[in-house]
Structures are given as structure tokens and as C-alpha cells.
Image 1 (cartoon, each protein chain N blue to C red):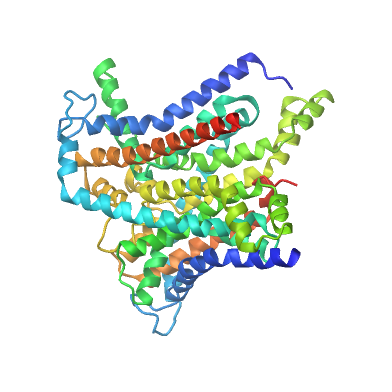
Image 2: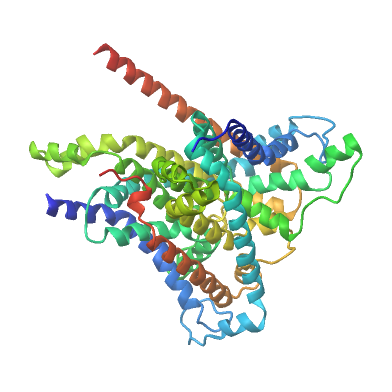
Amino acid sequence: MRIGRATRIALYLYGVVVIALLYLPLLSVGFASVSKARYLTFPIKRYAFQWYGKALESHTVQDLLWTSLSIAGIVTVISMIVGFFGALAFARYQWRFRGVFQKLILLPIFFPQAVLGLALLMWFNSIGIIPDWKTAVVAHLVWISPIATLVIAIRAYSFDPALEEAARDMGASTWVVLKEVTGPLLMPGVVSAGLFSFLLSWGNFPLSLFTTGADSTLPEWLYAKMVSGYSPLVPTVGILSIATSMILLIVAFTIYWFVRSARERRARTI
Amino acid sequence: MERSDRKIGFLSAVPITVILMLSFTAPLLVVLLFSVMPPKVFTLANVPDFSSYGVLISQGYYRSLLWSLGTALAATVLLFLICWPLAFAMAKVFKGFTLFITVAVVITLFVSENIRLFGWVLTLMKGGLIEGHLRAWVGWSFEGALYNVPVIIFGLVYVYFPFMLFPLVQGISMVPDDARQAAADLGATRRQIFWEVDLPLSAPGIVIGSLLTFVLGAGALAESKLLGGQAVIVIADEIETAFTYGQNWPLGSALSIILIFIIGSLAVFGVSRVDLDKIMGRRR
């Protein structure tokens, strides 16, 4: 089964076209954010960065940033902890209800998020909790902690259980094995799960829609503005939100690269 | 050893199970209970009368449901056709380029879906990126491409692209090269290899991918609101309206239960047929 040269080139081209199409709408948002006009039409005649200044000065936008940041931060920490143990139960240990557990973890991911948000709203209402940004943390966790679990589980699948067994045979207690062997081995998975959790929570809109009460997250505010008519702040705040994610990603990759090259250097000196 | 494995396994499952019980199972029970309450009540302390399910049929809500399921099905089929060649190439042909595509696609997942859809509005609207430039450069003008059913399906295809692509890649990479080679050596045509080797052996990936896109598409809201501009009302939109403007929680709950029932039975059916350990790459 050899794949011909022409097919190969066609496949590469196809890949490039698909990626270009994925990013095309972001290009439009980017251009819109630097258009000077209050009512946007392409082609853009005059460019200006005034809307960025206005967005950053606005107290509404600052509040939105802060709310989104608090939610994403708390969701990340809880998802990492819960996902670590969840992944062990998912992938590592053989226990009686593992099959059921695996399926239970997957169900929330297969669920329409807006409906999940509404269900949570009714649940909070019936137990007498008034929704605010803290209830949105719970809503995000329903969807994000299973994803964190899966991300760590992929890592847990690939490590050799013999390492844990060896430690236990040498007399290490369960706690010591967890701290000295399992924990460090799963750490890369936990870190990428944390990154995933933060970014998914930061950009999530359908889960926040009904569960933030009087507070509002960045994507929620953008949606409200988009539905009610065009505002020049929408593309600007959209780009600010994307930029935050991208900066975080770049920082994470830089740290990863530094840690890896430092480790390689150490390995070479030994 | 065996016994401690069981105990630790159970204990490590506790935290996430508690979270999901409190924030997934319990809310769904509340929705189920609300759906049998009389119309327009806001507490569960009422006598159930199941009237909301009657309204469902008499008021024609089934039409929105059919629109949701129809657009989701169309998007799933299209996505399979679009993603298959790319997924195949990522699993079997590309080398370093696979990593590039993976990273590029994952990054779009971290951008809020409504910002991406809004980008398509700016791209496709009259005076948008495409129409505006065509008019200015070649003098060709048209009425934008928004506010119809095809653009809703397009939006679904766009947003759920990664959810089809990655499971397919995973599924296709489970097809052993030897099996394809052997089939070719024995004189199978390309078409036969596709139907009798690739498709059956990558079935778990196909099932997961199709299920994810269909299920998420059927419950989607933003695509029809932002791109479709109410060209059709989808079921998630009806549910939202019942809860917000309609102030009719039991009706909204009954609509949700119908949607949840359809989606849930599909998801349970699909997930139960797939060996998760194998897909996610268990060693041994």
C-alpha cells in the first residue's frame, strides 16, 4: 500500500486549507478590532487601536476579566486534584466498579452544556442557593473535571505498574508510593490537565450562561452584546480574551521547554 | 496486592464521583421532577400532572426537536466526510505535520465558541470580509450568506470539527499497517481495503467521533442564534425561552427531558460498545 506522490501533496494541501479555514473567522475578528469606524464594513479604510484603550479602561471589562479569572483559577485547582485521583481509578487500579465509573465520567462530556446549566440553576434554586460566580465554578467542574480526568488517565495508562509494585515490595506505604512514585510519574499529565482546565473554563460560555446569576463572565458578556447588536468593543474584548489564552499557552510551552532542556543537560553531565 | 488495589481504586474514585453526584445526577433528578409539575410553578411542592408533555405535542415543539436532530445529523455526516481524509493522513501519512495540525486545532478549542462564530458572522455578512472585499475589488455584490439553514449546519461543522477529527485519528491509528498491506497483497482494491479493513478496524473512533458531534450538535444553541438568526428555532433555543421569557420551568424541563432522553440513550449505547482501555492506549 504505497501512497503516491500526488496523493501525498494533495493531503498536505488539504491539511493547510482546513487549518486556514479554522483560523479565518479569527482573522475577521482581528481586523474588526482595529477598525476605526463605529459601524464595521470591510474592506477597512482606517485602522486605529482606540477600542483597546477604551476596553482596558472600562470598569465593566475589568470586572468581567476578574470574574472569569477567579472561576478559571478555582476550577483549575480543583480539577487537577480531583482528576489526579479520578485518573488512577479510571486507568490504573483494577476495582469492582471501574467499568461503570469510566462511563459515568464520560457522560457529562456527552451532555448539551446549556441544558446542564439550566438543570444546575433549578437544582441551586430548589436547595436555596442564589447563583453567583461561585455556582458557575460548580457548573464548570461538571464538564471540566471529567476532561481533566481523561487527560491524566492517558498518562496513567502509559506508565509501568511494576514501578509502584517495586516500591511497595521494598516496604513503602501506600502514601509514600503515591507521593514518591505515582505523583511524579503523573505530574506531566496533571500539569497539562490544569492548562486544559484553565483554558476551557476561561473560554466557556454555555455553562456560564445560566449559572452566574448577577455576575457575568467574559464570554457571556460577549454573547449578550453579539445577540443585541454590534458594538465595536465586541471584537476588541474577544481578541483580548484570545490573547490571554495564547499568552498563557506560550508561557506554559516556554516553561516546559526550559524544564526539558535542563533535565537533558543534567542527564548528559551524569 | 489485589486487595489493596481494589481499595485504593475505590477511594480514588470518591472525590470526582461525589462532585458528579452533587452537580450532575442531582440536578438531572430535579429536572425530571419539575417536568411532571403543573405549568408555571417554581417549586416542587405541587401535585404532578404531566401536562407539560401534552403541550409538547399540541404546540408543535417536536418541529424544533426535528430541526435540531436533522441539522446535527447533517453536520455529523459532513464532518465524517471532511475529517476522514485528513484523519487518515494524520495517522498514516504525515509525520511532523501531524503535530502541527494537532496543536493548531487544539488551540482553536481554547477560543470561546461564540467568538469564533461571531468571526464567521463578520466573514460572511453583507459588508463582511468576503462580500466587502469582493465588492471593492471585483465589483461583485451579494446578500451575505447568513440567516439560513445551511449556514447553521456549517456552524456546527466548524465548531465540532475537533470532536470528529481526533477520535477518527485515534481510530485509524488502531488499524495495523500489516493488515492493510496484506489485503493489498492479496489483490484487494483501494475501495475494498477501505470498506473491509479501514472502516471496521477504526470503528471505535468512528463511533466516538460521530456520537460526540451528533450529541453536542443536537444540544447546540449558539450556531442557530448567531449564524442562523432565528431562521429555524432549535430545541435548545425553545428550552432557553421556556425558562427565561416564558417563565415556565415545567415546560422547559419536559423539553430538556426529551432531549436528554434521546441524547442519553445514544451516548450510553455508544459508550457501552467501545472498549475505553483500548482506545486510550492501555499497555499490556
